[in-house]
Length: 260
Image (cartoon, rainbow, N blue to C red):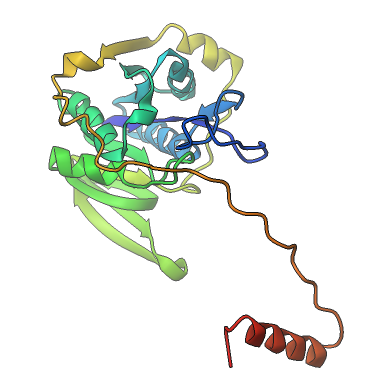
């Protein structure tokens, strides 16, 4: 069972004071702490669990600069066998279409039964790279996977649907799956794991060596402006007995034009 996991280095913005960059098209990431995309963390854990159960290899891959190798080192420490970084300097100039094109160009020459990506990327909250890769590679795919079993060369997957429902599919391999959080419990990266990771293969591929044309590297979507949400008034707490609260709520909804 040979598995490729696509991982991304993203900034932690949960408790950070955000500012718009000088270009006005993104947040200023200069002083932010970076780490592995949360969904990708579950993807690498699922890949390692399958390797431990069925044997095979796990290869982690990312697009970025030398600082982004930290994500690959984490993947190696969690149990991946090797890692690949496509040197792309500043990936903010690429959109999801271009990233999927770059990853697909590398992956198509590798041996794999499964490709995992996270459902979403924490920095832009796009969920397109995985599905675009599957189309580019012309392989079977399924999205938002919350459970996975391998049966006779096929993947039995459960995809998350609305309302707490799940869709079960039996998919011929090779296939690409986007992994949802909660499918497993990502392991703690130990000091021993980090030491072992330092001895594992981490290969760098230069972007020009992939033979991708300038036209293919041109983004299909362009962000013209990024801005922080406007500050609004705080929440209003309604007090009193249920009848009064209901009456006050109705009056508020009428004033807002939500109901007549």
